[in-house]
Length: 373
Ligand code: 2NL
Image (cartoon, rainbow, N blue to C red; front, side):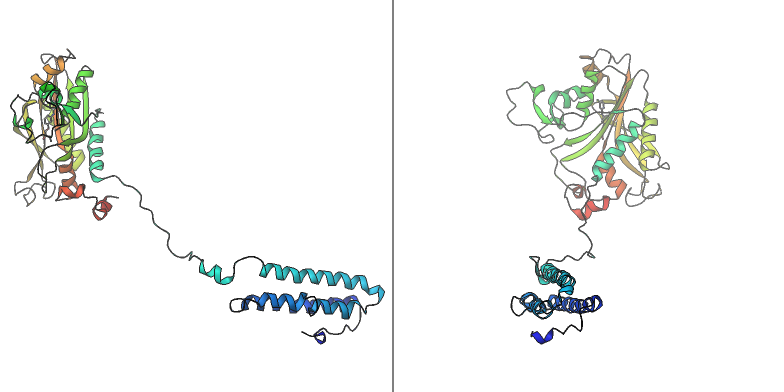
């Protein structure tokens, strides 16, 4: 940059000054834009810009000062000086904005994010199929006026077996079938701890704590010393129900369970009751529903019978009421009656969703669980 690059001023009129400084500013701005682009390859681009315009000796601003200001007539000095200062401010602003301490284009490009990429999708939690089925069953009975109870999974022999009318030598009480807590020998046999094999103990505790009428469902986890296979798991879930009042009959039991099965599997489902045995009910029955896969015509799932066995039930055995009456005399089997039922949640969930292996519920495989989200 030499002194020749600063043009002569033809005159010092306002118009002439405006024009001269406009041309300078246009040059400065285009050089600043060029320096900005060059910065990628030329780290000195902005320093060269600064030296070219603002440099103390060779800078064009200094040359303007010596060429225009010094030779200006006194009456033009003020006007020229103001334009000179305004232009100097423009140059300094250009230099400051571009060469300031901000990151280079290259640095910005390196940390740029692509806002058109899809976001990270967070998995929302969903009810486990067992929980969902359990809640569905409970809701059906809640709508009939049943309340919901829960109780301990570690129980005493008394609540799990004795009060449920299991005789002393019953095979279910054997450690072959029941998981027991170790080192209980010093306790009375009835106080020995075990993992409950059904939720009936909670119903017994409920009867002990309140007189009839009682309508309650107990959902929960139960344990059996069983080997796992496609349809058995040592830990599974049960929903048991209990209804006690004056004049409760087997017809009430049939009507209640027929309604519940229609609510769970669809209104076209039929039920039928077969004689069975449980220590805590008399009479006892197994309940079958018409096959939900073939509608009752007969298929592989129902072994060509058209029916599928789903739950157990019966009229509460007077002996069970007698145990409750030890704490609540109102459970006098001569004055009240009741029915009870129990169903496996896994079995019902497997039927509803067409699942053939019980282990799928506990494996934690997201490909399986994701289908219920
Ligand atoms: C089944 C059968 C059943 C009960 C559970 C019960 C409870 C009390 C009194 C009498 Cl407090 N009975 N519960 C009755 C009949 C059947 O369960 O197959 N469960 C999976």
